[in-house]
Length: 300
Ligand code: NI
Image (cartoon, rainbow, N blue to C red; front, side, top):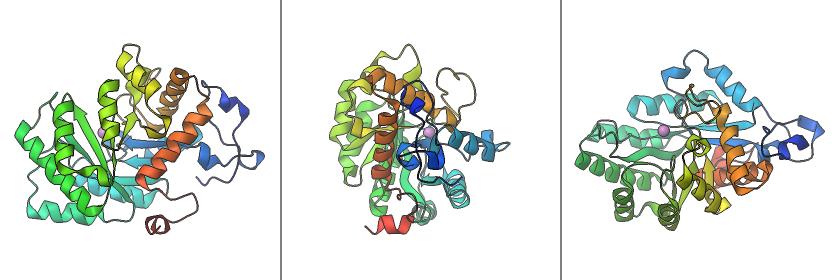
């Protein structure tokens, strides 16, 4: 799945068509045009039957890089292993607010060791989920705070999960001063007022599949008003498939529907949305330029 310097078919400039790479026939770098799925769960068993096919379908649809997200220790280990296996895949490590998180010294040691693996580009997903409340709220808060400290120790940006806990999430982030390495509000679900507060904390806004839903006026507003250099795109696959795939298993190839919706909302060419959101993802997660090694990028 190597991409050469190449170009985009001009049909790609329509906000409704999928970006495609035509190798040597084109004038731009494919890498500039590639979408990056900044949040997917490739390690989950939903993909056990067809993971290589899922990745190649994504590449064919113009999604060239993937960040697979750890949600607990076993999942973080699997994410790191996948990033070692596929050159387009990067990993994050962390314990999701649904998970039991006691952060024993042993867990902490392992998270720190995993976080230092070469292809780990962020810490997360971590945060607060007051919608499902699978763990007691005080436990969620202390787990979130403790992991923000680990992220800071590792010098990694954070992937933040916030469901029905906007105020508290901001409070914990402020208390831990995590905006040094920056981060992203994953699957953003607030309104423009809340988005502005996240931007003030140096967080990027991740737009996911729900932006394609008809009943999402707040999200449409955020996608229109957020500065384009602060938006990244994600699928959260296998969850939350965008329209017209809603209800199916989500996969990174479907990111093009989300990108097309953002382009339509902003009345901007899809090429511009792709190029800018990918550049944002590279900046936030310090991804190497194509052809460069991740070590070279880290030492800059
Ligand atoms: Ni997720």
